[in-house]
Length: 136
Image (cartoon, rainbow, N blue to C red):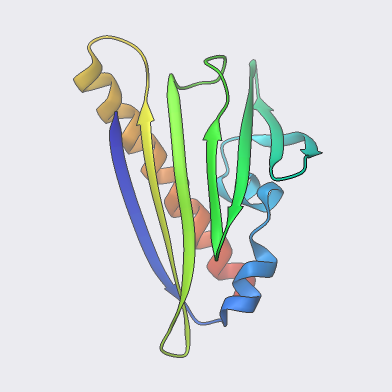
C-alpha cells in the first residue's frame, strides 16, 4: 500500500468546514465519481458512486472533526483504499488534512501502488481545492 497526505489552510471557521464536509460532498469534491445513492446507517454512511463502466461503495464513519472512509470490497477501482479526513482550528481559519492509503491490487505492486498513490493525491488535492472554494 502507498500512503499519501495533503494539507491545506482555509480561511473559514471549523463550523463552516464541518457544514461543507458531508459524505456526498466529499465524493463530489474529489471529482472522480458521481454519487448514485446514499444509505444512512446507525453509525455510518455508505455512498454508492460510479463513473463510466465503474461502480464502487464507500463507507464513511464520522469522527471528531472529520471522517474515516474506505472503499468496500474489491469491486472498485482499487484493491484497497482507506482515508482519514480531519480539520482543526488554526489561527483565524481551519487546517484540513487528508491521509489515504491505497493499493491497486495489481502486480508489480511497487509500481502499481505508486500510480494509485499519484492518482489518489490528485483526488485529495481536488477535494481540498473545492472545499476552499466553497467555504472561503
